[in-house]
Image (cartoon, rainbow, N blue to C red; front, side):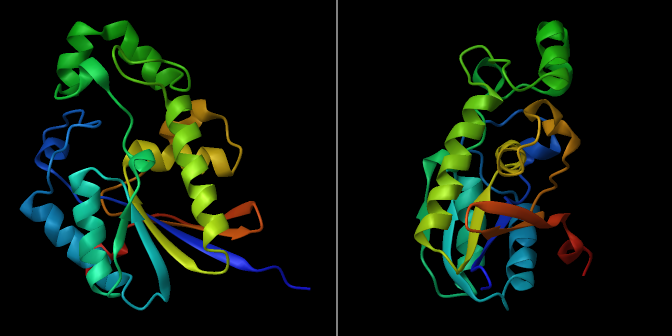
Length: 206
């Protein structure tokens, strides 16, 4: 007997001014830039032919706005899930990578070498992100078995989800690229997940 497949299309939000400036956004609610809106429109057209059942998104504006643009193609509402938010960067939020290297040199080095359990001052660890975000995805898959689901989230969060569902070492998280509006597809058979597509941005080239 063939097992039922549930497709989860993970989409990173469109670009923001802070992305361009290489500032750590975390849970600061930075909106899409004009370029980010165009990217969202491009990924929306790319996904327009998918037979989508439900659309979920992080409740941060850049993800919610991207999801809303996608949802217009399907005439579906967007359900916001705070558990799909980006990692809380705490004291690092709003700072550039160069600024962090000056003020938090060792912490930054540790964060990129072994990110799983490094807790950013006043923030959270990627293990915490993995637990909340992967639980949300598995819950969505359980509720919408056999459907195609779009989930719009953030670069760090999507990386953590991919590590979780594939049982990858979370310290390998930075080895997974996630560009703005990149599409990654997971296919679930019961609770077993397979990657069908990773970090695809061909829609931005059209």
